[in-house]
Amino acid sequence: MTQNLDTAVIRTIGLEKYYGIHQVLFGVDFSITEGERVVIMGSSGSGKSTFIRCLNGLESTQGGHIQFHGRDIEALAERDWRPLRRRIGMVFQDFALFPHMTVLNNLTFAPVREGLMKKAAAEERALALLERVKLRGKERSFPSQLSGGQQQRVAIVRSMMMSPEVMLFDEPTSALDPETVGEVLAIIQDLTSEGLTSIIVTHETNFARKCANRIVYMDAGKIVEEGSPEKFFTSPDTERARSFIASHN
Amino acid sequence: MTGIAIDWNYFWSVAPLFLRGLELTLVLCLVCNGISIAVAYVLATILYFRTPVLCQLIRAYVSLIRNTPMLVQLFFFYFGLPEIGVAASPLISGIIVLTVWATAYQTENIRGAIEGLPPRLTEAGRSLGLRPGGLFVFVIAPVATRTVVPAMMNTIISATKNSALLSSIGVMELTYVAMDNIAESYRSMENFLALLICYLTIVMGLSAIVTLLERHLGRGYRR
Ligand SMILES: Nc1ncnc2c1ncn2[C@@H]1O[C@H](COP(=O)(O)OP(=O)(O)OP(=O)(O)O)[C@@H](O)[C@H]1O
Ligand SMILES: [Mg+2]
Image 1 (tube, each protein chain N blue to C red):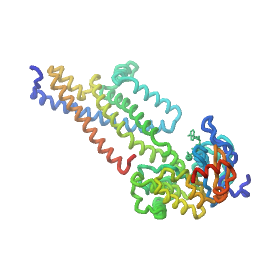
Image 2 (cartoon, chains in turn blue, red):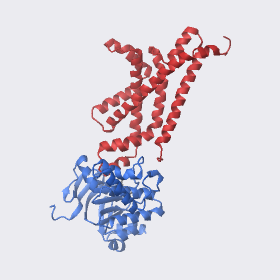
Image 3 (cartoon, protein in one colour):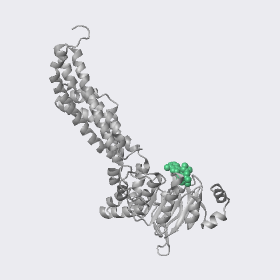
Image 4 (cartoon, each protein chain N blue to C red):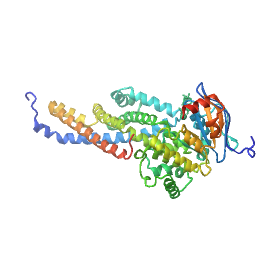
């Protein structure tokens, strides 16, 4: 791959992942270009989480390549992943906020600690982002004092604080009450509408239809189908995708 | 003396002696527990970062202490080591042995609390690009500290109670005072009653402090 011809921000080539002797990714070929919003769907255990966790080095891989702007990163040491992770944000299903820190400290801790921002600047940015996700006034609260939807919005803002180029969302609304799913999806849509490259694992078909530039469907550790939302939801090529869609409507 | 009658005059007459013993017990408790908690954080940090060699040494030390009686450790240190030229006064020996004993338990408490944290906490830190040092000091250790308080408290109370064993090498703490009085006056009932009251007071006082501490640490933090 030469860097100049490849417009992909992230690309994987034949990516393989084993947990011990148990193989979960069987040669995943994937790419995402700048500003693209890709939704990954697939049944439970198909390897969606594992795949996106590989993309920011939370999991090691045993075969194939991961490229970030054309550069192989799959074999990086933990310390070399660190600067990359600031450019690849991640949001987890269970929010994973720091429970002993206020909302504001959750947001400013990493950028200040890692010397990316001065404290005052970080707080200013945090407050502006809180305003944007309609949580202004909650900056002194602790995570346990917030609803699930509010915590997830804080978690999203926490990743955004690092000004990432790419955002990875792993089922950001799966742990939420049905009433709060909408508010979180709206925030994701808003924040990614300005061309923030994002990969979103979700079971929310309406969101996928509306927001995805492309749907990637995974099954048993492989990408078996990908295409535009219209194509995917109306006339999928594979039988597996068809039955998956049928069971999610 | 007849039956269970308690000679209150005698009881109050030994009170000043007990106060002096109490003072030493409290100092022992403060010094040994204070040092052991501080050192235990250092050892637990080394375990967390899996520092080679040191990590194995700490594990061996912790299991040695936890799997042998403290009285035997005390005798080994006070009566055994002088034979190879390592000798210290009863007080210093007592402080060292009690501290070494409590440190092993506190290390295990902190290690357990850290390992019990959700792995997600570390992952969240890693995915923000935090370096391991900052992540440990500002996230892992403080969050673990909130869950470790009850276990840490148990060890503090055990160490306080175990300080009674130091009387056996002649440290003039509470229990020594009681035994000394009994040897002189043959009044067991009064002395042991006073002794029980003293230990009960210390331990209940400690529990009260920790309840306050837990409430403080628990601010805004429920699980
Ligand atoms: N830490 C782990 N150790 C061993 N096996 C694992 C681990 N994490 C996941 N697996 C296995 O890997 C496979 C893929 O899991 P993964 O969590 O990536 O699926 P998923 O598509 O995200 O599923 P879900 O929709 O339920 O979140 C599953 O068979 C799972 O049991
Ligand atoms: Mg998953």
